[in-house]
Length: 400
Picture 1 (cartoon, one colour):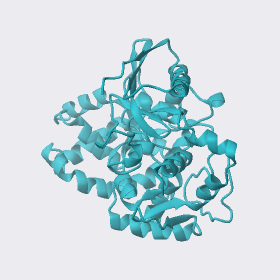
Picture 2 (picture 1 turned 120 degrees about the horizontal axis):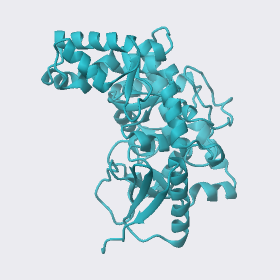
Picture 3 (picture 1 turned 135 degrees about the vertical axis):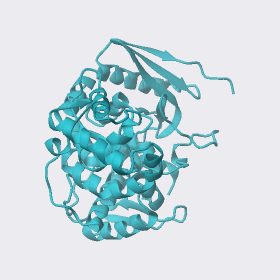
Picture 4 (picture 1 turned 60 degrees about the horizontal axis):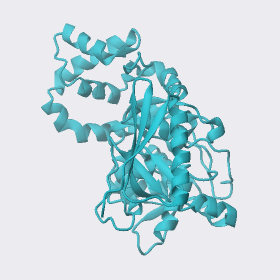
């Protein structure tokens, strides 16, 4: 598969281009190639999260922009509105999968955590033990967290104080909270000013029967392929934190449960490349006008550094590589990923201080005229999302 086609199809599947083909999924819905027709794209930030299953969210504000930019501009919420949906619990933020911070919706939080918690515990066991929170100490600490959040939403500072009052250290608090998340005791609550808080898991996540591991894994990879494909087995293992063996077995099950919609591509350049056959058909059937809009090489995207277009795939992420740069690209905070036509051409960051923002742009090369127009449009969109006066700083391109 040519790199340009791979990029275009991933942008299309990700909701960063054109209308998205394939149902906005809420979990557990069987589909088939025969009934995989176009469906309305998400219209809310929680709809974007539900469709993607889990959205990496280490950097709180940029991650919210990552949700908003996947919505039509006419109905795109600003940062305050997205934050409000998080406060209300329509979107939850918790450690799941590899683990790292992710946005998930309540309907997916329980089964995703039940599926990934044993794997995360295995991966984090040494770190948790070194921090002193294994065994009895960890159990006592989680009991304190459970007691605190049962009385309402609590900030990290309040939970730390409760640990001290219980005769436990507050050092390593994040490990305590991680364990509480994995044990389905606590999950994100409403913000208290600029402070994050934790709520009782059962308050914010609906009850549901446990899912067989094989079924849950199949849904995990199915929804990942539908929103990140084409993807290799290694991509899916890197994104999910599960083993290659787990992913291969789950893909076979996902293909069966979707009537072949999840399909392996015979590609001599990529081993074990899988895609959504319905999206592939729609992508191929676009008329010339649609194709030009979707594949415009001058289209600039300002993504958060942990965007699923980036982190949904394994290193070295050759599809991001622009001409003349050979080293693998790791577009992580504090500078995020600036793309042109799906390849990285620099970095950017929204720097918020008080009630003003500076949109910092660090290009790796000069902009073509059409690229500069597109960049100005994206910067206007970011400023609109932030909802505050914003100025733009574009660094000069360093001499070659």
